[in-house]
Image (tube, rainbow, N blue to C red; front, side, top):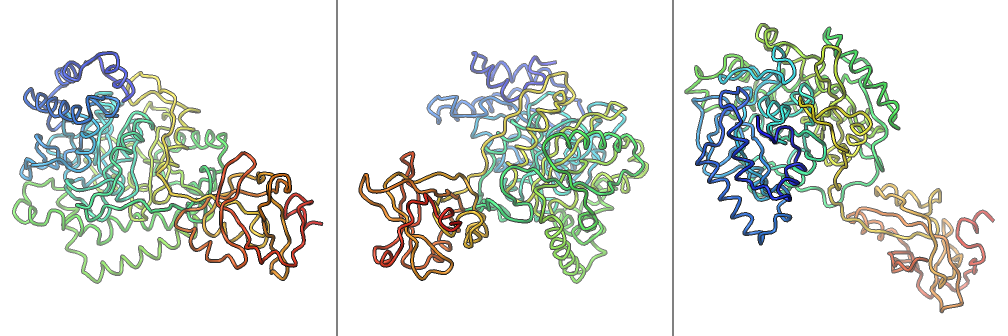
Length: 605
């Protein structure tokens, strides 16, 4: 086996800093891989590696020879074989469908631009239809811990090669849980981003309106780094989304302020008779309760009904739309289970589709109301771990059970992060998934790091010790800081004008000593005016500094009545921030209340 077995991205970076070369390390890696390994559909050959190294050298030259400018320089990765990578065939696990792409998928291109090298394409449930990893003519991918157990799918091969430490990360896709279930069954991190955060251009579609490219990694750190590289709007992808100009800093429906602390868990989890998973969940829950979080048992009926819509409703017609032309002429070349599922599209009319869409919106509203008081969800990633033999005997039922806590997430436009959560008594890994609203991806990573640092597991199926997890930076949100001095202070009558704009209190401090405070006449509710005076004539006045999304600032300023306005206020430490000021005429008849040191003290007097 290659000496790089079980390396994280940090290990690869360290090796290159110490003088190793991509030609040597990647050559050794590919030489040590088994081409008959069922997890792989294709691997770079000698010419392919030479081309990849030449492309990497060009990328380095474009960066001025600075390897530090390429965060993934020389780092190998694998891609699920429904994602286009130039020089490698795309099959979607259907040989009759295979084609050679002329360009990389956007996600692959962005990873290459950061220095990463795709070394092969991985096995999957055909056309990404399944959560089991057994629906492929290239063979069923075994679980990396127990070969008689399923690996999970549809991104089975990607999970397998990462779990065994062959590559530090791999790309999958996730429509109904394909990027999470294999992570849970193989002791991995599985990042399912907000829909549209990663481009799906160059991906063979399953359900285009729901599809996400996902990431399998050994650590949250690595998943976060790869996510940062791949994130970005793609004008060539109709389903790509720009991150909101200003994300709410506070508010209901999975958008509460600060770190995630209040988690909803299923009130009555479904285990389908799997006592091993149930016991592992109960153990994990007891550990979560000691992690400075509040667990709130909740009725998951609306989520489960929404999940059922994905395969039992007309969304299966979207899968048919993806392969309609191929299926018309090559139905006999398809996996019979996959063909049977997609053929169900004929059972639904256009009217059925609209009715299902209406029900989806109704359930979405119920879920929003149900989750208004929590920060995120905590669920089992997979409630069962069936054997390959059992799945072959009952492929549809057992597959459906695996998606119990994953199928609703993309329909509900949520972000999700599957993480290791210990082991069952039979030695199989057990995983949990953190779920929150759109664009909450980084917040989930922060909580996952906290969990894994407190309860680490080995890396994948290797014996490598998990390093300290340190989350990356959040998605950038332009904000404005405002110093308030009077009726907008916490608990005061106008404070809601800040909180309803998702503002967050940063600190209580004081102005510099160059201000005086006046109670303005004839104002309702009572309001003060802050007046800047010459050195030696003023005092420090208590203020609160609030941070609000930049997009909300204009509507806030619009509420401010004359003679008040927003200008610049000097704080005691020398900083200047936006703050309330008063025009000169407003002080006519005003009472000087500077002696109280702040508006709250004056009102209380």
